[in-house]
Structure formats: C-alpha cells, structure tokens
Image (cartoon, rainbow, N blue to C red; front, side, top):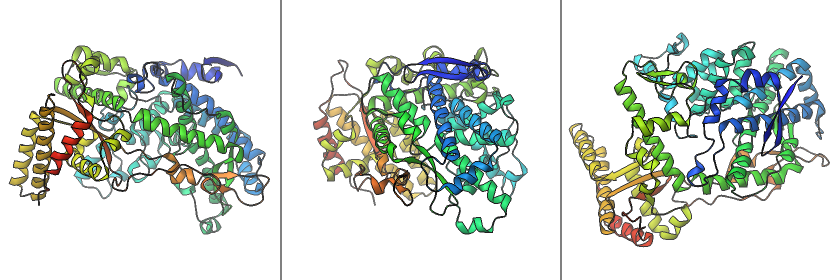
Length: 589
C-alpha cells in the first residue's frame, strides 16, 4: 500500500493512503475547504487564518490513531479485567469487517466538514431553508397522518430528507426526534456520500458514515436493559452488540465530551492564534481510549485508562477557555453578526432579483460542481471569497460596509461577563437582564436586535395588529418593549452618541466540567479490582457557578455607535444611567 506524506505544523507528517489522496483529497469538492476559514477569530487574533482543509486532515490523523486504539482495546482486552464480553465483541466481526468499519470511520473523520459553510459557523443556519435542483420526494411514510400544512412544514427538513434518500436510514426522516444534528453536519454527510459514491458498497455503509458525521448513534443499542437482552434471540443479540461497538466509533468523532474533531481544533486553534492555555498530550489521551463493558455487562461504552485523567482535565479546561474568552468575545460576536446580516441581505436580494432560480445561495448546488445560477452570477464550490465578492461588489449594505471598514464598527459597553458583573450589583444585574430579555424577545433575538428611531414604526405596527386581533398580552409586551427602546435611545443622547444600538445575545458561560457526560466518563484502573469508576468519583473537578437568577437565559452584549473620533463612552456612567432609567419603567399589568 502506497502512502503520501503531508507536513502539518501540529502533528508533523500525516500519512495518507495514496488512493484516498487521489479519490478524495485532490478532488475539487475537498479542495474547496482550502477557501473556508476554520474559525471566525481573525478579528481578534489576526494569525487565525487556518482553514477547514488542514483541520480535516488533522481530524483524519487523530481518527486513525483512535480507530487503532479501539481495535486493540477489543482485540487484546487492553488492561481490562472483564474480557469475556470484549472477546465476544471481537469475534462478532470478521477481520475484513473490522478493517472496513475502521476505514469508514477514518473516511468520516476526513469528510466530516466537507459540506461546511463559509465563514466558520456564521452562515450554516441558511442550509436549513436552502433550495437546490435535487428533487426532495416526500415519502408515503412521511405523509402518514399528516395534513397539507404538516407536509409543507417538512420543507425545513429538506436537507435531512436528501440524506435519507442517500442512506435509506429512517433516522434522517425526522432528526428533531433525536439530538438534531447541526446543518453543516447534515450537508457534509450529503456531500460525502453523493460526491464520493464509489467509496461505498451499500446503504449500511453510507448510513454508518452519515451517523459518524452527524453524531446520531444507534439508539436501539444504547443503554439497553438487561431484560431486553435476555429476551432477544441470538441473531438480534449479536446485531445489537455490534451496533453498541459502532456507537463507540461514532462518539469518537462526535461527542459532547472529547472527540477527535474537538481535540484537533482546540490544539490547532491555540497553535495558530498563539493563544496559550494548557498543553494537551493528545497521544497519551488517544492511547488511553478503552472499550469498557457497562455495569450490566451487556452494553459497552468508550472509556479511558487512568493514565489519561490529567489530559482529559486539560482538554476540558482548554475548551472552556476557548469558549469563554474567545468564542464569547464581543468583537468576534459582532463581526459574526455583520456577516450574518450581510448574508440575509444577499439571500433576499438574490431571491428578489432571480425569482426563477432553482437554487438558493447557500445550498447543495452551490457547494458542488453543479453550481447555483443567478443570471450572470454562478456560484460553484462556495467559499469565503464568493461571499466577500458579493458583499463588496454586488450587494453592499450597511453591515457589509461596516465589516470591511473596522473603523466604523460599533463598540461594546461591556466586554465580558466579568466586566458586566463588575458594573452591576446582583439586584441591578437582574434588572438589566430582565430588561434585555424584554427587548430581545422573539425570533429576532437569534440574530440580534437593532434599536434606533426606525424600529419604533415596526413596534407601532406590531401593537396595532395585536389590538385588532384582541391579543392583549402581545400588546402589553410590545408596549413594554417600546418603553425600553425609548430609554436606551435617551441614554445614548445624554452621552452624545448616535441613537442607534445593537444587542447581541449569547449563552452564559457554563463550564464543560459541569456536563453530566463529563462526570459520567468511565475510567479504568487495571490493577485495582472492581468495575471502572466515573470521573466525578475520582477527580476533583471545576464547577460552573452560574448565577441563580440567570435560569438558562441569554447573556446580552450592548453595542453603541461611537463619535467620529472613536472616543469611548464612560461604561460606568452609562451603566448607572441604564439602571436609573430602567428602574423608572414599571411593568405594564
């Protein structure tokens, strides 16, 4: 077997089967990832220019190490005293089957982002409402018990139905019934299967790869009761055990705790940006992966050798750091908002100008050689530069101009949760939080809320419509929102800044150490008798002390338009004025 070596600044040389290079990596479909930025962090860390191409190679490299560790864990019962179930698991697969599932898993690692949208995660939600030339047939099974409105509602699952047609796996008919995958994961599975179809022999292989990419495990093999196993016949029993092991592969690529995708981007992002948090010994972590029988000795799960505990903690801590101080930074959030608003403008203009177009801008067609046609504009192998071209030259808008000219951007009043907590006392925080929630109420909160003179007309229309329909609660909410809008603009006026503010919401920081999945990680101590221990039983872990009044709500950043000389407002005085004005607003009964 011939291999090619690709130099990677993180792992050294990555060895890749020459057939994979020729059939996958060198194709235009995969090469597109060179033009898709890995992160949206460049506004804060200018060196963060790495792309999805090198990230995908990194995940493939870690995936190969992990698949070998899993195989050896089962084959040699590595450091595991409970050998009987592992011996049974190994014997259920022929050597050819082991080889094939490992190949499919590694291929999923390589292709897990092949359908990723430009500008990191900023635009991926537009896949959910995309349209393409591919006909999406609603099956008879989907129509059962549904009226015309229900069937029309299936449009929002257009991409999922596309994936169902490719795999014949019914889990993709209605993914909302499970842990719904991210839009880019669904699209990546679609691109992987449709554009590299010669790499798969049947629906079961296509389904397994799609499940690895989307993280949808075989639910029938997850934590089954002992009684269920006893009632099964031998063939069903073996099938469930096989799927239980395949779930371990799926979780190795797509997990809420530690997986090879997350592991690569934590390491690579830090190395590229120069951001220093902790060092992660990925080799020790992956070699510590072990298949562990659950307490009932019928189910299996992916656990770790005790030697990996320190690396597990470092990995979780590093991800916490990135999530809190980088992903949640107001500069990065605001730039993402500008790009997203620009995409909305472009999508609307393209629909308006080219009503006969068979595809939307963000779609399966745009990602492939098929292309999306909008008059003289043709989009193929959609990348960051395509969006930038339209933002700069075809459909420029206020947000795109603000994106291009950083000197015209709005600035945040507070720059972090810590600064917010310093500006406001506990009772004041509750007051501000409730006011922001009132202002941000509704679907628009997902993409931010602009408060300026123009928004009053929209609220007045909302109030009038609610009054005509005798919707008193809606009237009251809109009137209260208008009071807060007016208060914010009066505060801006008193500080000599433009009466125009933007509010962006993000989740309050919550440490991954507080996740139940992290606490329940199984750790094996081979020289100590007894079953493996859960991580929370043997490790002192950080906890997330979310303020009691937050209640899973959203943290809100408030951005203002500075004066011409970019002079910043006094955040302390602005905050004090907010408290005084908001206190004067009495809830409408």
